[in-house]
Image 1 (spheres, rainbow, N blue to C red):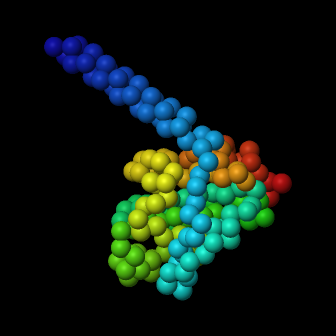
Image 2: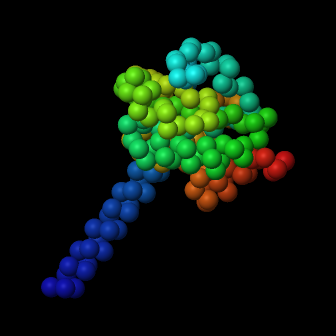
Length: 181
């Protein structure tokens, strides 16, 4: 009986791993080299208020690193701050521009309850209708696909959060961090 349970456990684990590998492979193939479409006008936070800016003011560097977060997810907000402290501060801004996209169903709630805890993060784009995800057919909840590097044509060339050391090593091939050039 114990042997039977052990074999079942191994088979279930193997099947789950294979399903996970297939899931990841499918999403990576779907997203790699995908052109990301930004709205012509984006809504940003400046001095605790919303302002409209043209997308060209955020893009235009050789690379753009996009970090998308769900405002209602405390871990996501923490990860955003960690990314800002550990990664964005080291980016060579002459080569790469960071763009932070925050999805929130209620800007007023976000403004009063979450925004005060977010410091020194810019540009902070607010997406109250989740248009960025919908327009680009991006995975909605899987955070592994919420950070990516775009080339100058706004095509995804790298997926994953460079806060993760092994992912950062992959990002380093693009010489986007200060001191790498």
